[in-house]
Image (cartoon, rainbow, N blue to C red; front, side, top):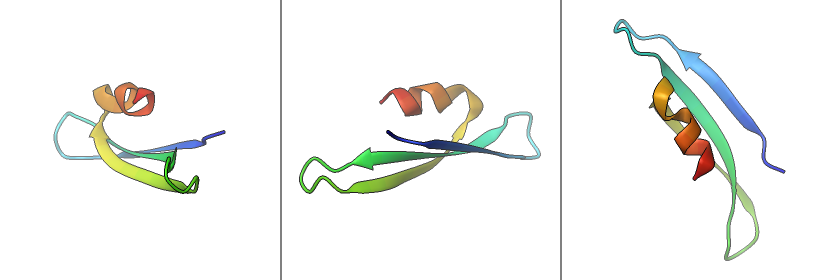
Length: 50
């Protein structure tokens, strides 16, 4: 089961940036790796549904 972590990063602009961390299983080896991205708050749901 994958865990998710979300941290809010403040910017001087009106938009909020969020650091998202997702656990991804490698199809080749079966090992888990972490995928990290800094996204705008509107794109967070799309990141976790991929």
